[in-house]
Length: 386
Image (cartoon, rainbow, N blue to C red; front, side, top):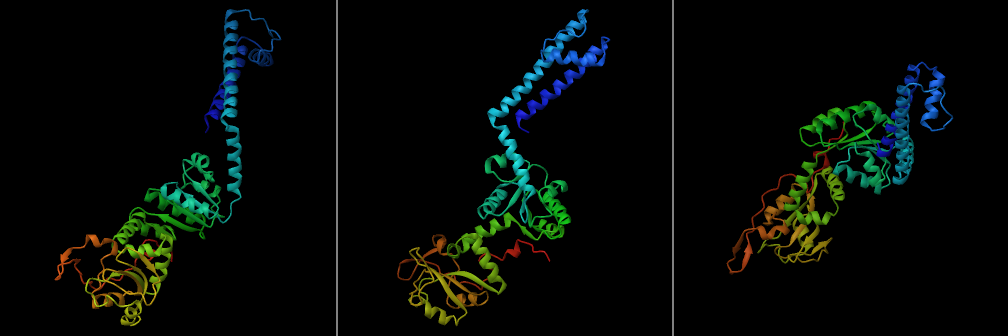
């Protein structure tokens, strides 16, 4: 609650308390109720009509002085709160908050985001960029509204009433990205109970949580640590293919589709003195008997050629990004001595002297590769409900 509102409420409570105590006090001196109320009003507001009854005793006069000080102080405190509201724009904030509440009440087919962690911030940025309606539930809702101007509600996402207030029955999806696995499981359970048709995406910190989230009703599960680890591993093992595929979303989507038909993108390097050196892309694909196609080449100079011409000549230490069946590619690599060393990591390979005395790199004949994709299908880290 804004400080100005707190000040006004505090002053108002103290003012009412002063009125009640003053009325009771005058009645204690033997006055009638209406006389006591009238005396309190003209005393605090300084009307100056005169005393209702003579203040004969010193106690009555001292009590009246206390009432004047208490009433005037509380009134000034309240007025100060209103002035603060005007100077700090609290009135505009209050009106804006009311408008936000009405906007939340009118949402339909929207996304409910539980938690505004770094992952939640990235998610909401993308939803906002794509003009997707959403509302955030987070204890820092006021700051979210002020900083980002998003629709947000303050509170605990596990609260059923709060979920209903943000329109869970009208929402199309709920995303819970709280940092605690137990909280995400509980939110998933609650949301699924309230809306059986809701699409639920949940974050999990530990792989063991994936099963619990599925049982709780999550449609998709994201394990950030798993995704990050796989991403870093592929940057080390297959950087050329990563460069070729472009944005992470495009890579993930493409490899999901490829995995469904048992196809993968792989990266191979032509070692020194390879039989394929000096051959063209067309000749390479012919030797592979149509088992794969070359979709990109990383030249020894570092230049990346996407969709190379069939007449493109291959040289030693060129990197190939090939698309083919996940079993055929390793067989071809082994047959022609192609290495699986990423092009970007050649400097990490073991250098040796060739018979001619020139400095080269150990070929490191590739063994049959395990069945894996450049980026594994999202089903490895996202659970799909039933």
